Length: 91
Image 1 (cartoon, one colour):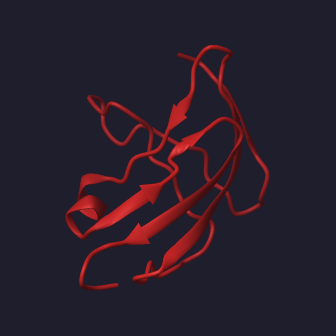
Image 2: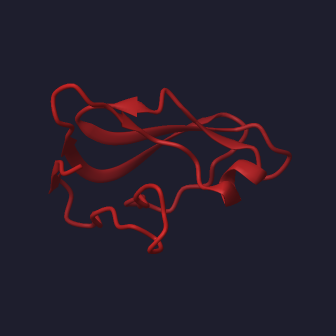
């Protein structure tokens, strides 16, 4: 599926497929942020336009999920600002 994407912050990096067999695209934060026990907002600095009749779904990478970090409200349609929660024991 193709979708429109745009850089809305000068430090943004467009999403890419991390490996040939990857199911999704990797997103990148525009700032270094430690995800603590509280909710942390992470800005990717990109905008996306999902085609009509589809939706975007953001999931944590397996390395983050193993540490207890999850994406809250990971369904989006326009701007990629992620809300992460750390349920793990470390930052």
